[in-house]
Image (cartoon, rainbow, N blue to C red; front, side, top):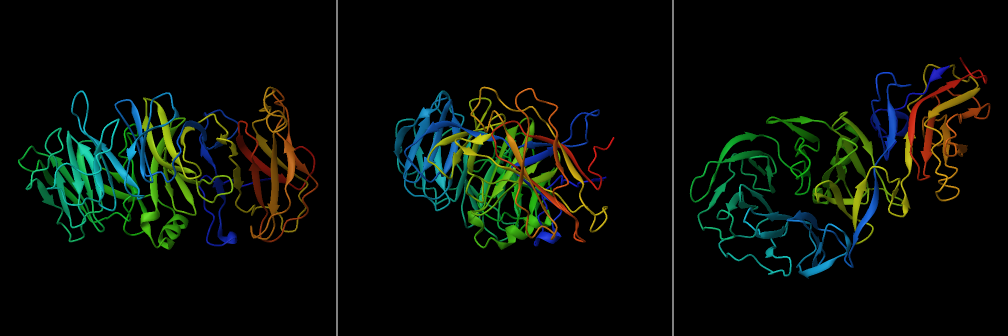
Length: 475
């Protein structure tokens, strides 16, 4: 009997034979000390509808004073905490993705939207003004708020700050990020630090209360930002590390003031192959105590679990990337997002096993079973799933009699067999055994690889898997 090596982190390789396994819409976590295995595989959180709009092209999302604002192509919408149908706030020029910010004015803060093309406007819950009220502000490429100031980054390297808890910008209320002549790509507030990202460097500024510009530079690191939306971790509700795609096509996590690389080589190659880094989008959300940092391109999505420092991939039904876009923490304990498939606002939910009405397929591909006789027959393969997960009151048969698909490859993962279906057990049938007995042929010198697919919308849990020459149950 040999253990089937299930990966802890996705590593598909540049060619299938080079791969060490793959995790798609599933992640690994350590169970308790006395559990049946040292790892447990769980389905990624699903999506449930929170609110609808008649719009398309999500640009930004943020909750401000109990109202969720969402920017779309040409329009600004809002939702209350009850979700439902959106209310249109007003016309919003452009289609580019952008950023919301608010100051600390009481009881009603000033609110700003800015996109990467230089369009910037203030708005209220009932109207969009269409421009910024102070002509001293040049065309910015991002906005954030910190200590009651609006802070705008300018492509030429300047950074402007508004008056405290107000919108006017003094003509001389700016400084220049000039450690390197690389301009500015993005400004974010991270804790009590203003972080200014250039294309080749990142500068950290603190509020020292000076006039007219209240911030002073404290630290510079020689690591830039690949694209305007390539950073996440500064959002409310996250409380973890700042993580971004750096100018060297790697993902780095900020530890203190040190950007430590966390991306695997497979992801580095994917990032490098993206010619237009403005199409990359980073976001973050919490689920079941796991802090997930997600990076999407138009054709793929990878997710980093800060609890385990492991990566998995994510896609959506009939799409090669995740539908999740522009994530925001809202209304105390909700993680909401835009949707690349619809013009709706979705909620990221742990115990939802679909993406709204679409299936959320789990796929696990193993590494090769090397410690097994080449050419030896596979008498049986056993998979220790959590069984009895059917729902007697659910949709028949995908919830009442859920099944899993198991296939295998003997050519290094270049091709897989037609899958065999095995039941995961009706509700309460926890003694179900998921096995393939004397039906999968002989191995090859490449080493047998296994693929597990599960689409039925029920709880998914996998612990271990083994293969054996002997078809009998091994003690």
